[in-house]
Length: 437
Image (cartoon, rainbow, N blue to C red; front, side, top):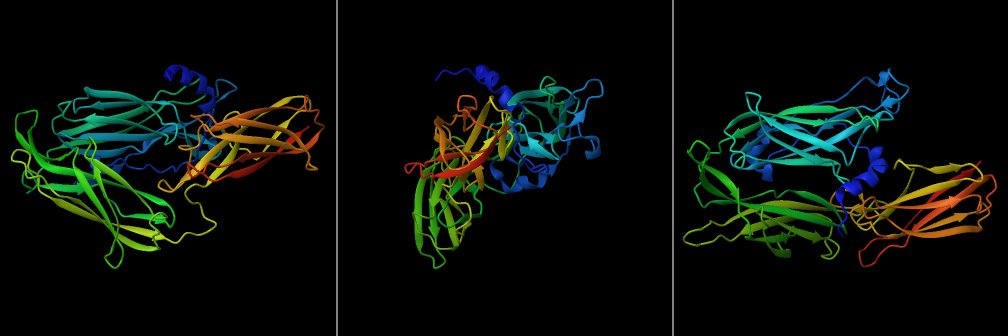
């Protein structure tokens, strides 16, 4: 729609300055590209060098600045790991930025993260800058070893956040090593393999997303002119997916063309297939290509899909929920306002993603929410209908206690979402208390 990114950032900067979503404090290591089996040996966690202090030295917001009466919040980089990549592949670096709040580390979205790579002589050979994502909270950057002409060896990777003292956030950084390696094994040129296929568990009635990447054993020359061999992704090739039950009967199949990265994706809807609880065998096959110049051998890979019984009181695909928030996107159970003043009510609509195993806002932007205000006796005092924001999934209304002639006391706020049959989103309702004092 032609909306400028700087304008969006400017308008939302204050909203997200204190946006919190609790995440694990443990670093989640970054592995090799394409999930190849030989890559796993090089992953080891590297701790972030943030502005960390003991809990005894911090209050719920962070560290007190002794030079002023204000507070600055601690920050740290997590998710950075010592990583290896085989030339001429690309390594993806993914990190999160976290801040310390009320005794826990929580993620900070929409913050710029700096990525820098240095050789053994401390010369900078690459740099990039990326925003932490609004939904996943990750910032990511890709290091293309062939484009950068990186020789095999160990490089220093430094990831940093510059801080923002106007918002009260300290800077921080973290370091790790990137090892660039020469690949070698006994495979022949033209051999193929399927990687990225994983065993998965899904709740009965939900969907599970499958991913498989086709690679072939190929040859090229390194920066010094030596001939090398490596596994390379093969784009635009058909992969065949088959699902079998415990008796060996085929219950589903799909034929998918791989994308530019060699990856093909498919989705199994257990409800549509009426799959019973149990373990199913997933087979992915590539039939090969007998072309004289681009001949590729066939290959296949197997994984297992476990369908668990659906528990009626558990979260399932299509479930929705509403959270009440304050002006800084912190969660609330109730609101308080002085008699005669106005108060802003924020409600965020989220839906359950069975593939991710949690609630997110991927499907809940631009959805209507109904706001109701009731007298404790049950009489309806006010109603409003508002669309949720496409980026924040929040809808906001203002209640004017003077205009509504509200006396001191407690009132009930009700927010309803009517659901959407087309998008398979279920309705939901949430309540909060408005204290007029």
